[in-house]
Image 1 (cartoon, one colour):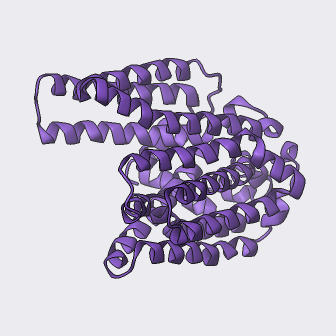
Image 2 (cartoon, rainbow, N blue to C red):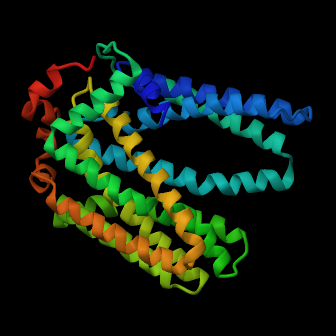
Length: 365
């Protein structure tokens, strides 16, 4: 949360590909440094923490740039296809990464695995540097001012204000259900640790299926608003199933449904939302959104940690599913939400500036 405004500053006004390239190069440097320490048997906690600080700052840049780079690569009408391709690549990497890491650790050492990580990040940095894009005039202000500007704009646009608040409430139960509780459920079912990798793969495969066309097809057939309702219902069903299931394959099926639902929710909503943001505010508004979601996740995990000693994992999953359902009803109360989602993709670019121009004329101090 601290570094996200820094990441937004590094991205805003620059070509997203080059920002990604420099951030990935910083991650590669961290991997090389850790590999060197591992090769020489050096363990210095303060050095590791410093390197992790570099990694966290680079990750803040990657999160902001990767969330907005599609705007530089496609027109409004092709934005959903571009985001689908991006989500496909992310899902494949998410599924393949743990498997490759496991193989490397089985046949070599952690030092060699860190070297491989640095090599892959260097390749990615080179590819990212060549991405097309444009630069825009950069806003000058304090880091805190940038973040506050993002939140201020969101607050003064009723659609964004209610959308952010609803997403914040949904993410509180969603975060522990999709993350913290998964290994606990695996242990609760008496499954081996290798099932954790299978769970990650099932979720990634679900997201891949959604990105490959299920999400776009669903939005085309029933409309964007109904697609979001269906995807939210899918998340609730997945969490309830995870609470009630008693076998490993049932858990994998539930996580697959969760992956498809999350992919649909992200693609259908994110497409219009990104295109509607003015180019000179997209980094700050995205950073504000990411900070809100990070805070919601921290609250959710903290609350889950407090109640888990007193309830079973299955009960926790059922509670999370019901809370996601309750919070998700807020989407039906967002002003002009349905009308916004049904706007033609060719007309949604800079929609917020057209509807709320004076909000963007004021600058945070």
